[in-house]
Image (cartoon, protein in one colour):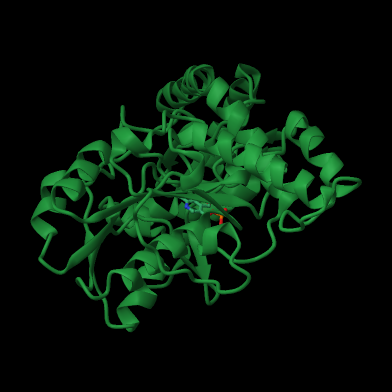
Length: 390
Ligand SMILES: Cc1ncc(COP(=O)(O)O)c(C=O)c1O
């Protein structure tokens, strides 16, 4: 049976080069990077080499990179770390209503702690208006947190402009670049970013490791207290194996980003054009130009998203939907609702996300199955709607 993975925004496989770089650190090179002896020194030099590589991916300096357990922890650290460190100056945070739950739920926590959060709306394509960011600033604002690219629809935000507004107003700017790193240029200088989140498993590195960029001079309150690791920003014995993997993945991502972007766009655009051609009543979610190269989110109203995912899975195609199952009921994605989609359209949405191992043959195979699956599910849902007693 076919086995086509089109869910790279959820996670990516570990590249062979990354695995090879990590392997010795599972075995002989097992030292604790804080130990003084040669085992420790060996681990320390591997961690510092990885720091240089991660810094290179975002155009930061190695001393501004701190390793974490992934994107979720980096987002939590950015939001809570700045909110508490700057509490004496103000208690207002600006974000958008389409952020990843790591940001939205950190904001919810901070609201319960007495902070005030403004959730900015986005337009039909999922873009936030920098003018609205400027208008939302108050003399209490200490932090703006707006993602570089959205994980569900791929829309890329005008982060350079937003960062400039933050800089001009003496406010910290954090951006979640978990989805954009390796696919688009990520440059903390161009973005005027003070903090930036990254994750290993989205760039063909291992799961459970990530990094946060914190601009030199920006004070942050740690969320984990302990043995003063990572310059006291993130205590806990360094995950040397994971960090080495993240470093290698970052190095490869930086080298290959341009080519990767072209290839992903080419496959995604082809799939999008064929879906529009061959399937009726389709709506593509996300910005036509300002979008991650490999992401295609499409709504097929009348065909329920979960059933689409399951039918595609049975045909050997792995994709995902943004809907979440909460207390047994399937909820439409908060991102699609924020774009103004009605719940029925939002529930009939599928995200295809391409990666470096996909080929145009995968697009052909998807198109040999998808139109039939969509029309069958539409018929089923029309038939069951007709049976509902009035
Ligand atoms: C935009 C974004 N931020 C944060 C995260 C969380 O990253 P991690 O899985 O490394 O905790 C994800 C993961 O899907 C993401 O897409």
